[in-house]
Length: 579
Image 1: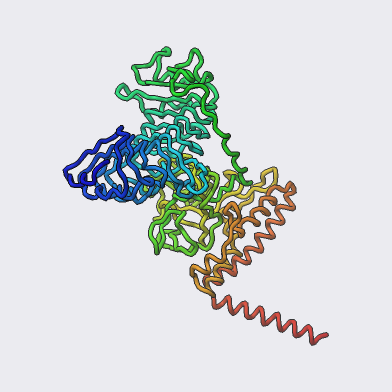
Image 2: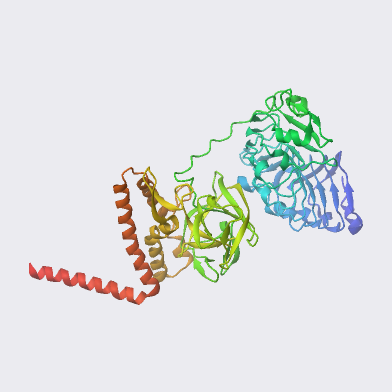
């Protein structure tokens, strides 16, 4: 038993290493941790230290840098966020070979306090299981949280049951990544398009599909001092190892200056003339057969018109007047958001609000020299290009200039594709919003990559942009919200009770008009589609006139409405007298 008198060492004890002592006991409440103010390294793996999960008492070790409780009785309880609160010096965590209790939402298994530790460079969670303590149901971890680990260099999850695809994006700081036998699906696209440059990648024994990217050699960081590892065997990949990878690091199938320590794959990747250093079970990580996992879920079909390309990701940043800079997933109806250089407007609706999305959506991540981080929006969403032109994000290229919050233009320095869960489309009166410092639209095209409305199967273009059409179609909804807030006031109650969404998070104000419009543009008869569109646009323009009158001359609008009512009553009276 570790005596509580250990605490008498106080600030003098910097290293406590008791690992691989199975008979060494320690039990809660670990009050003596509070006295070890100088302890920097705690290695207690493979001991009989006991606690209900990761105990909150850990946060008393404020100087702690290295922490290992793998294969102990610090399990069968939750990974408590409070345990890591304030441990800003922590660099190394090993909590593998343990069983933990599920904390709730599948995407929130690891607490935020752990994920956002500012100096964490190593996280080892191999052979970990998560169970619901009441039902004994096993849950699988997703790796979406890794995108928020800004300093992580080594992340190993071997034999821990995972679900989903490779995290996107991989952290730029990541060098060593291991998911051996974890069951992840998807492809290797993130290794091709991401900005992280790995030195070690053990991706074997999963459900990865597709081909090995041709330019993968350019995405690895190999040297004589740190030769690379890339093991891909035990997946469902197609085709051989790319010649670019072989030519870069191998010459005549002989390792080039020792820059690759291990390159493994299945027989299809590693034929007799390949540059693989090992094939399948020869690589030594698995005994036959390879792990067998349940097949990945079939993704839900994308909605018509570009897969619901109406949205920003939850990580997009927006400046609010009253609450400062917020993520998109923190916004609420009624928030005053920046829409121009010095203009704030309320969010009167969300065209799409799905914070608990089951499936991931694809976003373009756009950065300029002056932007606040990277703007993330779906490819069909509109951004304002130089000249104040609203264009689909998919039409932009590196070097193009976009309008910033100041009204000036700034050149795009990078565009990449990422996947996220959660989609948001806040609507403002002007139909614009400043996102990550870049001027964006509230609207998107429902015809892939199209800036202008196009009718019929022959593609007849109408001189109306989808940004303009969005403003027109939203006129009744916008007028309703203006009138409601004018009469009742813009309060939390009035904003939240006027909105409802379908199962996919789309506003009912948007859903039905969108379905009708998608039917309209596919009509073969241009006479039918053109006439109907003209009638609807004309009617909605009348509503838009009412809205502008209310905004600029509310007294005149009231007087006009009164005159119309009086005139109608007088006409009704005259008709009665005539009869």
